Length: 328
Image 1: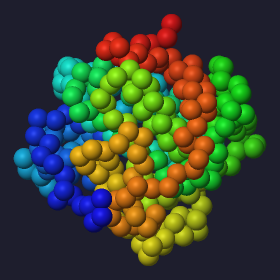
Image 2: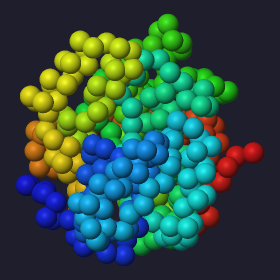
Image 3: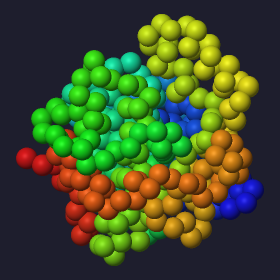
Image 4: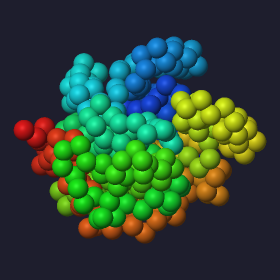
């Protein structure tokens, strides 16, 4: 994968793609480059105004693009269900690529519409539910892939069995018991560990079912997006926002570079299940296999996270061609 770049993306004509968080940053670049290669792309975004603007921009940059905007709020499981149910009008049966890209970073303490800590609820639980609800299309599509965007910061937040000891009701499955004990960066890191554990366990279950769907993960290194400044902006911490913005301008690679790992994981031939792809240096550069924390490949932890995620979201996967179902 040395020096892999967008010129290596194979022809995507006839392929159907969903990219979450595609209104800006690496999500937008991912959607644009796949559309440029001929894919039919759904930009799945929370904000309708920004999503529509991103669609207009994409159509300007890629006049031949087959793309549309669909509203999706991963912090609201009813929105996830509505999105999945409404996708029939895009393509009733097939889905070649699901790019679980959207995320939030280092926010002040918030909860989702369903009562979960916002970063874990958005970054992991929303994507867990979405993937399960779209599983019938993925299973029915030869060569389908699920790519979930994690972060090298996952290594700062171990997610172990103790973190998942209470998963009933509106339990805080990220291991953060209350607003008083909340640590935003640890919460973010744990949500990114969950992304990798989800990829590992999904890969394991797909293999056990004899499915050819490939689940892989990626990370952007240090890419200049609005993620870094969002939390500080929400709290009015102008000095922190300026610091993050300075880092974006002086250190980070542009979003185009940050998206390469995702695009490689999504399209490079012979991508292995449970791969983790990102910049070779860790921060920037061409995609390559990335180091991951050892707990993100532990079967027992993955199984426990899976069970907790099913209980929290009400989505249970079925790998025998029937797809996911909602729990009663």
